[in-house]
Length: 230
Ligand code: AP5
View: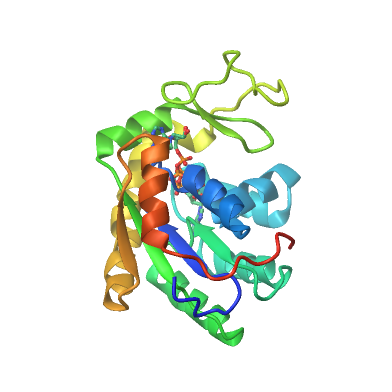
């Protein structure tokens, strides 16, 4: 990676629900020492905490629609403001609309930064649906899959032994809406970032290790890893 941002870079993971953004983003962030910023995770944390933002977001999340752009942009702005200014970031599930992408460009420009790479993970719809239907998560956020990455004890987290959760928005009707919303609202970002020559396509269909190897190649050599705090 060019290291346009001096310290850590800014990578965006783009792709359909279930393609593996969270699975890969957590690992990429950990390996690079960068923050992994998932707007879905931030919203679910707000929901669990019962904050007004979380309760408002729930109306959209439960039916598979996008939370309004201004709510999301404020959430991300606040999150970034609480981090070290030069820390690398892996964005997962953000931006998700062209207005969000424009807002991210503005926020980063204000800090003398910019998006370095956008990795588009791609897999056929039947693969996405199977992955989503098999997903189970621990309350702490560890993600399993009953078909591809099952816990040792059925229904319970390996690390904490807590019961695993089936996300409310992972049920078939909601998944269909989420896939349609992706095509309508998020797929235009492929053109947005393609025009800026930031887009790298990653085959998301293989197993987790294969996809990670392709993703690392697409991200390229990171700038100097920044400190792991923040
Ligand atoms: P969010 O949480 O971002 O959901 P999403 O984009 O729909 O993505 P997913 O979490 O479903 O999938 P993923 O790509 O992360 O896949 P994962 O790695 O988990 O958003 C939820 C909702 O919040 C939205 O619908 C919206 O309402 C709201 N929201 C969030 N951000 C927003 C924004 N910016 N603007 C507006 N609203 C927003 O993998 C899926 C499963 O497959 C797992 O079980 C995993 O173990 C398995 N798996 C992953 N990779 C592989 C592989 N290679 N092989 C086999 N299994 C695999």
